Image (cartoon, rainbow over all chains, first blue to last red):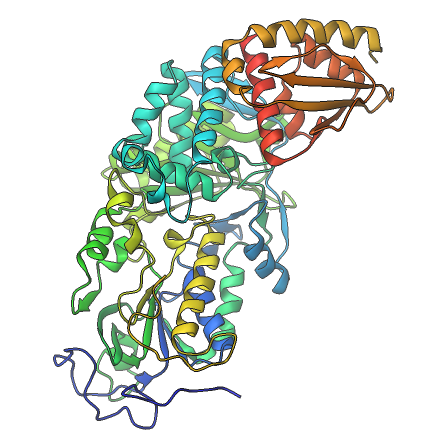
Length: 516
Length: 119
């Protein structure tokens, strides 16, 4: 049977209405919409982190409400079927070795996986020339490639010294966090071509230029996935397999399990928090819309004892916290921009490049698409090429508009695969940098000084406010796996704070008892 | 198919290139390991040791407890040691199988790739 501590000033369904609201939330209106409710825990964000948090909490006997800004779940994982019938993952899409939590979800919901297509020869674009290569590293300049392999190795050796959970504890943390990944690459890779190869890989992994990333952050990030060597690999690495039918499916199943605990189309605008709990308000046009809640106010308010914020740091900045967040937590949100990436898909009637012995993979030193891979369905019923426009290229192409980006991307595909690539059946782009509720993708990119300055604030609860999201994960941060593990961690924190721990002993639910 | 004599000769060439490679000197530092080679076609076995950042002579048979076991055809071993084969490509395609800790596998892959690229 579910144990519930005595109220002690907290809210419950029976007695919350009419009580003074927590904190100093006197500005909140008095109208109560139908969706308004009082629960134990509010979860902000229904990506994999928020969904996992909610599911764990529900399993722990806790009443939950999840507020999701979009009208869909999955966050940075989003699968769509194009008008022509191609299933396209606009966001996160891969699973690799050691991503066991994500694999368990796939198994649970009977979502199959298949190997990312790698058979064939890769294309390298270097100084405007087209080359072909096999294996991991472009080969047009062997000296440069040897530089890259050596640097990759040295980077991973250095990364082994860094704790992915607490990178700021490294004895040289300040020094490592003072410089950028770019400056390290310049020091360790002599040849310009070698640096270009590394830059292409960094753009694909982070959606950011090496010069934008703290070295300590990059080391910790790589370490959390088993090394940069793992992150850049397909076979045996982070891009090893894809999900049959798309990576969003498990999120859909998790959402279905939450039933009406999940409220979509409700971007959270404010979190009032204090010793007596939280009051979370979201815009929710649905409550005031025709056919919706007749007395609707266009917003929804959930009162609870705790809140778990499961959105990226940059998006947390959209939420008004009252009282304001501590300085280090606020600075963290201000200083952790999302990677800048547009993911494009070109759909063809068949994977014609395979007929030419090509794998579909491209690595380029310049242009619009610095990384391309074969994203065709498992059965090859049609051909799909996926490419990233990342970092400065992504910002540079803002003014080009969708048509300009399409033209530039197709020119790059033609350069790699010939004239057959000029006229895809369909072409779609997902511009993550323009997504208000992600702010970019694939992950928040920490610049110099942020981890050592504000890192400990990343997971540290602020009173009844807890933090989840792949950015807070210590393993596979930036990946779906990290999102899932962060949700498990946050739910564990909250359950312990609410006295729903494994031992079943009621906790005191003090403000600071969720701290690490 | 390559016999034991050819593999021994090819290895001597590879060993000389490895031990003369300045990048490898760093990569092999502190990495004393025993590597067994198994030819999937002929059944021949060999043992390589790394000691003090230096590759030792090839020994016939499986000697000692291996940290790593490499399985490939005798022809691939000969091509690898002669520098005619991209080791990462063969490893990624599964034609060369490396068994050992993830760290040891990564290091062997990286060092053999560097020697291949440096020629």
